[in-house]
Length: 344
Ligand SMILES: Cc1cc2nc3c(=O)[nH]c(=O)nc-3n(C[C@H](O)[C@H](O)[C@H](O)COP(=O)(O)OP(=O)(O)OC[C@H]3O[C@@H](n4cnc5c(N)ncnc54)[C@H](O)[C@@H]3O)c2cc1C
Image (cartoon, rainbow, N blue to C red):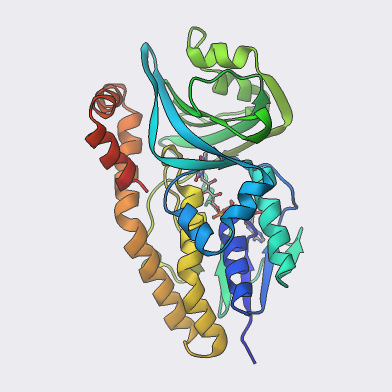
């Protein structure tokens, strides 16, 4: 009889893995602490090879029909600097997590997967159990505290499908979604604790008073229910091979959001885990060996990307380095292509 697999976390990584395993006939249960549909702190901009993982799993068409749109252009704003709209090196797929996570959950159940919603796993992570429980949230005693905020709005005028606005304490992306909605999502850092995020999120996301971001959002028609936040983010790259548990997605490591590549890594790591887990289920591989193959696969695929992304994130937080980078990237197609390719 086939061994079953338990996946802890019904986000993008967990559900994609669950779907892929069901396609291979593996008995799977996903534990999800929350319920669907739900908003997540996310720029909702899928860029990179994860799109190809979704296509190989036969999911891309369904996601597009469920309510995705394509982003072709990007514009940058930093203080006085405005880089007009230009083509993205490769088109991205933009889809609300409210739509996407639910669509994947329905697809998983349609394929015969067992989905336990509102169920938080508190057991061990032993044989047959995969951790796909998302980003690690860590209390920060000192140093920079990273936090993310997101909401949706209508009536937001944009110069490009994606606008990146660099503000003194971080960056905010404005991304077109289907049906006239716009995702507004920012990553910020602060040396002091940030109380009252639930009350002060508009202040953080609005940007300085004279900025383009500020004027964009001043007239936005905000969907209050879509607001969500997350604090205590850790963007320190992690190696899978050093882990004692089988991990995929953000539970393994988180890439700086400015790359728009975290969702892609969730899909890619799920795809990388499929064959070793299917072999484990058939009895062709021990759990330890399956776990090792997944870890090697993830490290091989992600290590260089994470290093480049960490470097890019550091540079973007330094105004002088950011200015030089924007200057170079906008004047040299080669530089922007290299930065794009290396971080996804
Ligand atoms: C500010 C910000 C902006 C971002 N923008 C982008 C972007 O534009 N593009 C992009 O590609 N990526 C972006 N990301 C990253 C992206 O959101 C993540 O990489 C992606 O959600 C990871 O998917 P995941 O499945 O690993 O985790 P998640 O989607 O977080 O799913 C984890 C799930 O596990 C569940 N869970 C946790 N613990 C348990 C438990 N014990 N038992 C049961 N369930 C549990 C949670 O409820 C959750 O549903 C952004 C991130 C941030 C912070």
